[in-house]
Amino acid sequence: MSEEISTIDAMLQRVNAARLKGDGALLGGIVSYLEAIPFSKTLQVHRYRLANGLSLLLLEDHSAPVVAYHTWYRVGSRHEREGKTGLSHLFEHLMFNETENLPAGEFDRKLEEAGAESNASTWLDWTHYNIAIPKDQLPLVIGLEAERMAHLVLKDPQVTSEKEVVANERRYRVDDDVEGAISELLWATCFREHAYRWPTIGWMQDIEGFTTEDCRQFYKTYYSPNNATVVVAGSFDTETLLSSVAAAYGSMAPALLPVEEVKPEPPQTEERRVEVQKPTVSEKLAIGYHCPALGDFDHAPLTLLCEILFGGRASRLVKKMVRELELASEVRMFVGPFHDPGMMELFASARDSHTAEEMLAVIDQEFERVRNEAIAVSEIERALARFELGMLAGLETADSKASTIGFYETVLGDPGASFARLAALRRQNQSDLLRVARRYLTPQTRSVIIVHPTGSVLEAAQ
Image 1 (cartoon, rainbow, N blue to C red):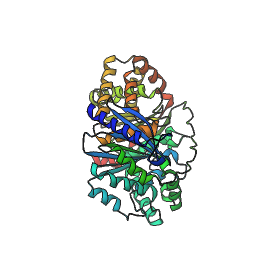
Image 2: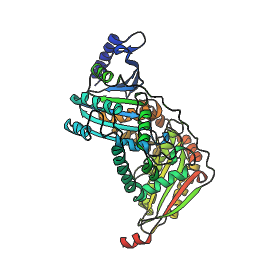
Image 3: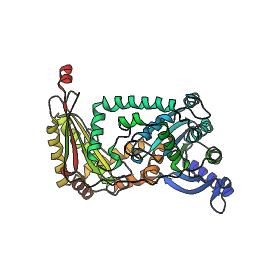
Image 4: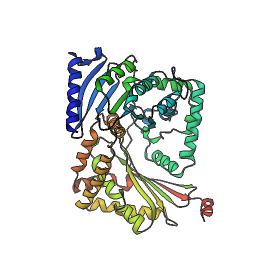
């Protein structure tokens, strides 16, 4: 592997030496080479930028004859405004439709014929399009992605059709889904000012109210080269790729990106509690604790603490609530990896006739313990090993490498941050975990949703 990497680096040096101008420009000034960023002990991510602002991150890895081609747009639900929530997610659907040079369905058909796998996702901070392909199909994908970045057709029939698809998706994933509805309510309860308070899929009245002009303005603003990062990982030739990308994207004009009007979330000083009835056979509990942004110093120790409490069968609360007391059929917690301060989301489902209050009492007891007693070093080491194994297992393929690079670049501006994050986790000690437990896991700063089952569902389950 090291010989292969040396060959790649040597080739890159030849490319840059041959085409690098005095101002750092390549390919006649269309592309600039900016830097190399370490990615593990052997690989490097090379950063380029087109003159129109398109970011390009390249990771050559010839261990398999495949390429992952990912496009990340720096737009998610936090970039929206009230009355227009869900536009980012709607575009995830619209981007697979007709373009000026491709009839409806042709984009997917070409990818399927090429043996590609493609998907897309939208969240609070970003929108992501990913394609995994055999390496000889890379030119096709470059052309297809450039086509839909610049030439998407947005007319009434296309917009109306996708609005109906998204409205049905919302009914299925939120309105008719207990966990989806609980999560949405929890976020809306936890946040009062910040844009994280509305769901990525959008409120139903906003989805139904989108106009074609709304979509055109959104596309013109955010689906622009200077708001995107293309990540390519796998087996490709850098020189050839740069030429192809410059030809496909170089003529696109940058957009005037709006200033994001972030409304910081005011401190929460007392518990917020909501009780609802849902068609479920047992009581459920959802708790939201405010947490720091992904780039904050406290995010790493809080993530490790969450792993100790909820990560796997040997974790404290899974062991106690599910295995020993048999209070819950499921309990989990997730620390949000967001650009701005976000939320830790805890969910528990009661077993049989046990109640949400019973589960909450056990959670409070354990949280009180971690606020007052140092966690054993053996627990910290076990949690760290689980996290490290999960992270490294998530970097086995070209597609997973591209996802990791693009995510950390979009959220933190550092494509190699996953390894810096692992190093930060390794530095945590008992004192760090005590500190974050006392700062973040406090009853007065949380939001609680208690779900009571409806009688009809209970009767049906008997």
